[in-house]
Image (cartoon, rainbow, N blue to C red):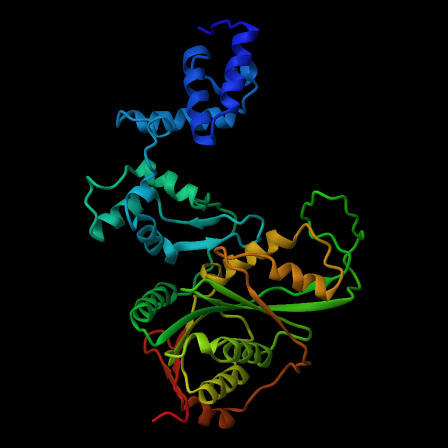
Length: 401
């Protein structure tokens, strides 16, 4: 039953909890809740003023570690991902193809459709012994600690899925495996973000300083087109802000500007593998885009491999996760000038690295198309995948032997 404690004892427990680090504090709160509150987080909150969620977490951690006879906080035992060398890296490689960001950029959490049991089974298939691995429950906590959450499946809309979806994903996996072992291949991920209206508009973010925004988002002073290039292995994000329109020419000009700036870091690279979605400006059947990419390959003497994600699955493209971080980073600010928007973008971080931010102040014309006859010479430089020709193709530079 609930035990009565004097005011002095309650104060002593509260003071002791404040002096502890977070993990040890949770363990202490859980132990006190077990002895004096019948293990009830709600009663612990009422008696000691502790947050019930923290107490609940402490009780769960205590239960998880009881089977081994240790309590992490009390014994100082290292976390599983720190104790087992390479475990977190192997988990990330395993779940990478299934990771997606929040499509609405309302949170920076990542989501994976793999359960902890599936991750555990995958690690065993990749050489881990079942005895060395932590329990599925601990793996679930590792995933949650590192920002990977399961998302509830909602039966709201019919699934949009083309017949080739599975084949496209298989092609993606094979292409990524090949690039990971090719020292002369650089994998990048590209995408354009929705236009950013410049003005004193609310972006539905929060700020610790009092700010007032206009009550409508009409008549912006300018519009910016953000285009991102993520160097996947290095984690270096590059953002180019255009002041005109999102066209095939803008995208390839941004790629050229990026390569001119970064090629000295990749002197050994002879092949670019580009992850991209099925946007209208970068479709593999967009004649102007293909023409410009052939020219890009020729000018830089690079072999270009275009690896498309299936339609309706662009959320798996790694660059999408960067846009989620940017949206959360600057949503509390009033982007009332171009320079302010650019400066805010430059102060975000992706994997602890600040992006390289630039601008492309050039007017682009929409609607450029080539006739079938004009495209024949450009198509001659394309090698399309036999199974998914629309979603996998390689461009050989015209000047190569």
